[in-house]
Length: 287
Image (cartoon, rainbow, N blue to C red; front, side, top):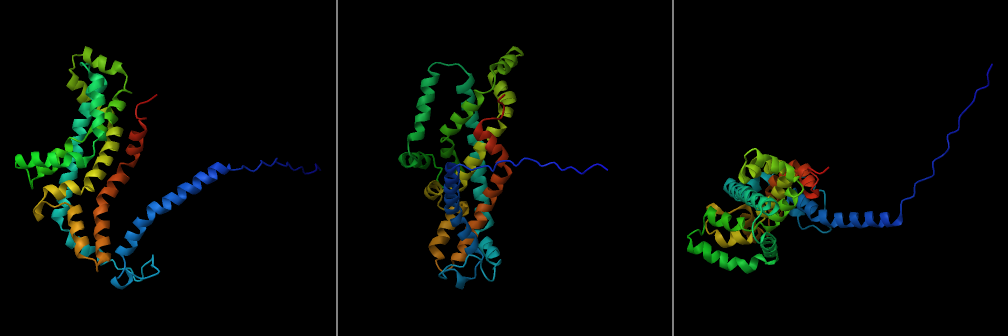
C-alpha cells in the first residue's frame, strides 16, 4: 500500500501597504466625510418631526420618521417652479451644447486667419467674473424688452461657453484628420462633416458637458433673481430662497423642499455617470 503524501504550498509573503497610500486614503475619507455630512444632515432633517429639528445633541436617525414632510414640501414648491427650472436648464444645455460643439469644431478643424489668437482671446473670457458683466448684460436685456421672459433668462447664459468650446476642441483634435478628409472627397461640406461625423463621435464629451452645464443651470440663482419679477416665471432656486426667509420655524419642510429640488439633477448624474467619466478623461476614441 502506497504511503499517503501531502503537498505543502509555499506561503505568499504578506503584502504591505505603503504608508503614503494609507495617508492618502485617510485624507480622502476625511475629506469625503465632510463633503457628505451636509447632505446627510439635509436628508435627516427632512424626515424629522418639528420638535426634533433643533434638538441638541442632534439625532441623525429621526424617531419617528415623518414621510409626510415631502408631500407638504411638494405642494409648496408648486409644479410651475419645477417646469420653469426644467425649461431653463434644458434650453441652456441644448443651446450651449450646439454653440460649443460648433465652436470646438471650427477651432479644431477649420482653417482661417488668426485662428490661434482668436482662440486664446476667447479662452481669456473665462477669467472675467460673471459679476463684472452682469450689469451690462442686464442693461442690454432691459433695452431689448426681455425682462421677466424666458429669452431674457436663457439667451445671455448661452454666451458663457468658453469652457465647452475648449473641451470640444480638445476632443475633436483626437479624431484622425483622415475621417474628415475622406468625407470631403465624397463631397461633404464642413457643416455635413460636423453634423454627421464629429457630433455623433462626441457623445461622451457631450454627456460630460451636459451634466456639468445642467448642474450649473439648475442651481443658478443670481441671474434669475435679477431678471424674473413675477411668480409665474420663478425657478426652484428662487422659490426655495423665498421659503428660507419665511420658514425659519419649519426647517424640516425647507430641507424636504431642497431634497426634492435635487432629485432631478441627481438622477441625471446617475444616468450619465458612465459617459461623464469617459468624456472627462477624453478616452472615447483613443487607440
